Every structure is written in C-alpha cells, then in structure tokens.
Length: 228
Image 1 (cartoon, rainbow, N blue to C red):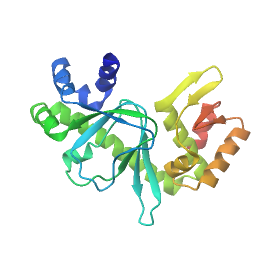
Image 2 (image 1 turned 45 degrees about the horizontal axis):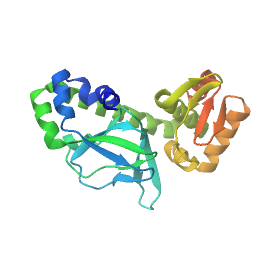
Image 3 (image 1 turned 180 degrees about the vertical axis):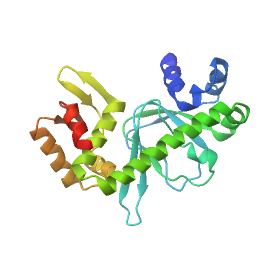
Image 4 (image 1 turned 135 degrees about the horizontal axis):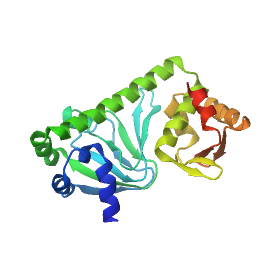
C-alpha cells in the first residue's frame, strides 16, 4: 500500500519537480484524509490552507448558483491535485470538494509546502503549470457552452472521462465515471433530460452502451467526430 501511495504521489505535478530525497521529505509532511462517498472535504467560501492529491477514488469540484443550483466544475481521480489555487492566492475556496466515491487523499499544508517552493523554483513552476492546464480546460468548457450543442458536449465529456478513467475491454472502452445522471448533466451544463436523450441517441447508433454510472464506448472515433 505504501509503494502504491508513493507511486501515485510521484505522478502528481507537485512531486514531479523534486529529486528522490526532496520527494521523500515532502511525503513526510503529508497527512492522509479519508472520505466516504458523498462527504464534503471543504465548502466554497471556506478558508484554504492546504492542497490535496487524490490517492484513490474520485472527487468532484462544484460551485453553487445564487438560486442554489449546483454546477459540477470537474471530476478528479488518482494522481490529480486540487486546492493549490489558495497557495498562490490565499482567499476563500472557489469551489466545494465532495467525494464521488470512497476517497483517500494526501493533504499538504501551505506552511509545510512553502519552504520547498521558495528553495526549489521548479516546484513553483510545476504548480503554475498545473494551474495553467486547469485554466485552459475552463476556457475550453466556456467555449463549448457557447459554440457546441449538448450532444457534442456530452461526447466530449465522456471522451475526457475515458482518457482518465477508461479501461480497455474485449467489448470496448469501459468508462466507470461513477456519476449520477444529474451529475453528468451538471458537468456538461445541460438538463438531465437533454443529456439522457443524447446518450440514448449514441446508444441507438451503436457508439456506446449505457451501464450503471458507467458507459462502454464502442466506437471511439465516431464519438470524437461528434465532439468536434
């Protein structure tokens, strides 16, 4: 289990910039956090004093609208990091973090991280690169909401989930996204009914098979074309 944890941590942007001794020292500052499915790690507006790396399971980041509706910003899995924005901009959290499945996290306080960032600029560069990649994804999502129809957004979201969580099987690419129909609709910024209609159409065309909180992609190339 320790070896698996170290392997996952080493794949995170924060640890990629460190040599073996530096990574070992930083790992000694990590605190393990366990959450059950549906538990909230922090709420939008909370003070942020640490970042997290997912060791196992999935976490969703959400934002609440004024009328109480929830917008699913992203779904993250093992090796992915979140909460780093507050390290560079120590203001309240911009999203809530909620466990989609049972989750094990590695938490790292800003006070423990700061000496590594100030003494090793490569660490800061990797953290900034991770933030830049997230900003690019956010920009893409905003553009999709304006220029892409709902079926196209559904196809693109499933392909993104497949890139991170998909596993090849004899009958296709299995994508266990662990999202409810409502959460998948929130992810693409559409109603559940519209998203379900798009999924049903893809299934009718033989592009995918719908399973409980999962899909099996049967024709990835067709899905890619629809996502454009």
